Length: 273
Image 1 (cartoon, helix red, strand yellow):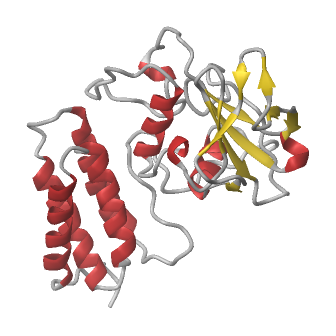
Image 2: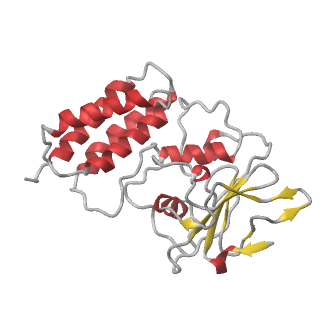
């Protein structure tokens, strides 16, 4: 049974796991150059490129999103179902190998004009089975809305990518929905980018020092009222987990200690009280 995504208000991330030659790194994440220092050993499917994109943005991979309907395909792929929160915005379909409109290699997008197989459907290849406990599509996450706009998936849209979404560095974007002092992003984003770049090598990158500096600076901005503690702590931990996933406890200690020390030394931005 097929579901028409457009009329149903659906945007489905179709993650493939086909055996295919891995393309040049310049074609893995369209619009995002991946430095040569970043090792891509083991990258083999859309699960890997989607996880890499999510890590670059400081988010969890949609393939791991237990809050929305996810359907395992007979070929080993995964359909991640989301609901379009804005009927005035229409998203176009794409394939992960497309030249002009693509989200990531081996990651297709099913939206306006596209169809998706409903869970429980039985085919000669096998059954499409829902994973986890969620049985309804969740709202399309804001960071994915931004990525789809950046990669040209919005029909009729010619708006540039929102400020703060870098196409050259894996900097998790600042949380939306709250006011931030002018200059806070310009100060903290480059420091977080330096932490993210440490993923290029398991050692010898000065990771602890860079994470400590970013968290200390963030603490100063928190103390001055320019950042919210919970939001920046989460952002720092996400980028630290991306760069050093094997030392989560140590990452948390570095972040928490530096935030605490920095917060007692408020960092006031120029022109701000």
